[in-house]
Length: 289
Image (tube, rainbow, N blue to C red; front, side, top):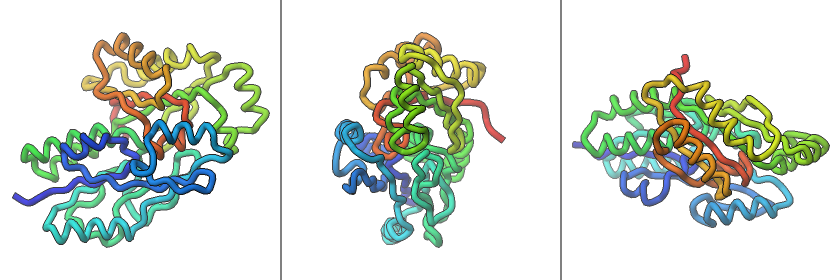
C-alpha cells in the first residue's frame, strides 16, 4: 500500500496534536501586523495574536504560501514515494494571490506543475469546513479507504459547508476601511452587530442586531432557517477566547439537540479577517449547485 499525505494550510485551524495523530501536514501563513512578520502556529499563540490585534495601530494582512514552498513540499513527497492529496480550503489553481482584507481573496493551493497524482481537492471556500473534512478524510485514509473516493467525499462535503460569523466589535472593520469611522462610531454607540454568512468564499451581511445579547440568538436562528431540515446536520464552533463562545455553544446544544463536533480557537489568518472579538458557527448546509 502506498503512503498517502494530506496537505493543507494553517487557515484550517486543526490543532497540532490532531494533525500529528492523523498525519496531516500543515503549511503556515505569514501575517504582517504593524510591520512585524508573524508565522502562524510558530511565532505566537492564538490568544497572543488576538491581544496583538487589539493593541495594534493597523490591521493585519496575510501573505500567500508561495508556489516554491509548495513545490519544495511536493518534492519531499516525491522523494518519499508518497501519493499526495492537497486539501486546501480556499483555492484550487496556483499561484495564489495575497488574501484580501475582507477575507474574500484566495489563499494557498496546489502549485503549478506539482507532482501530484490528484489535484487540489478544495473548491473555493473559506476557512473552517476543511478542518472537519480533512480530519475525517485522514481517518478514512488511515483505515484503508481508496483515495479517489475520499477526495470525492471531501468535495461533496465542502460543497455543503456554511459559516455564520458574529463579530462583537466594529473596530477592525473601521481600521481596515471597510466601514467609515463615522459609521463605526455610530454602530458602536447604538450597539449594532452584523450577522454575516460566509459561503463559497463570499461574505454577506444577513442581518443587523442591536446589542451583544442578540448576536447568538440571531446566529442560531439563521442557521436553523438555512439548514434546519438537513438530514446529516453537524456543526462546530469557532471563537477568539471571548465569553460569548460559551453562550453560543449552550444555545446550539439546546437548538440542535446535540453537542458540537468541535469547539476551537480561530487561528491567526482567520481572525485577521474576522477581528479579535468574534464567534463563528460552521455547519452542514444544503448542497450548492
